[in-house]
Structure formats: C-alpha cells, structure tokens
Amino acid sequence: YKENYLALVRSSQPASTVADALQKVKTGNVRLEYANFSMFARYAKELRIMDDEKAMVPRTAYQGIVETRPHENYLLFLVPKDGKVTYKE
Image (tube, rainbow, N blue to C red; front, side):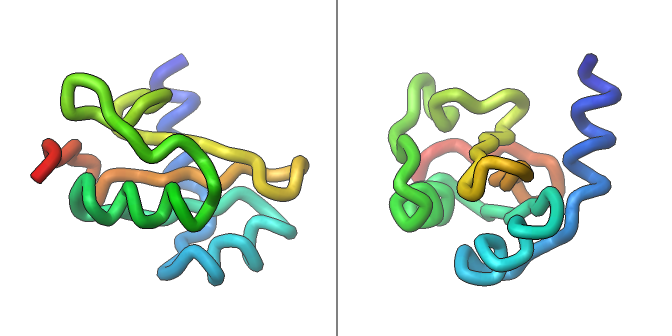
C-alpha cells in the first residue's frame, strides 16, 4: 500500500499555490508542498479542511500527507517539502 500510495502522490501534478492547485485538480491529481506546519495550516484554512495537529503532525495525515477532493473527481495532496515532516513551530 505504502509504495502505491507514494507513487500516486509523486505522479500528481505539482502546484505552487492553493489557487493553482484548485484549478489543476479539475483535470487530475495535484500535490501542493508545505515547508512547515504554519504553511500547512494556512493552506488547510484556504481549502476549508482541518488545520490542527496532534502530536505535532497534521490530523488525518499519512506520512505528513493530507489529501482532499475539492471537486469530487481528483485528489489534492498537501505534501511535506522534500518528504520531511516538520514539527510545529
């Protein structure tokens, strides 16, 4: 499961902003990287998803990755930059 899931995330289109991600996710899976918890919380608020943490990891995250389906068809992944989970600042 882990390898397949991470391959799905890696094969997603990269996005640079939430607006860019919301546009791209209409046609395919998208990943939006966050560098720290503050950035994750900002993105989550813009996407209207849970923006809190537990044990310094975003809630609902798997390996730091949080997914949502803003337009029902495709996934938008919030992904830690360089695959590293950065603890809350």
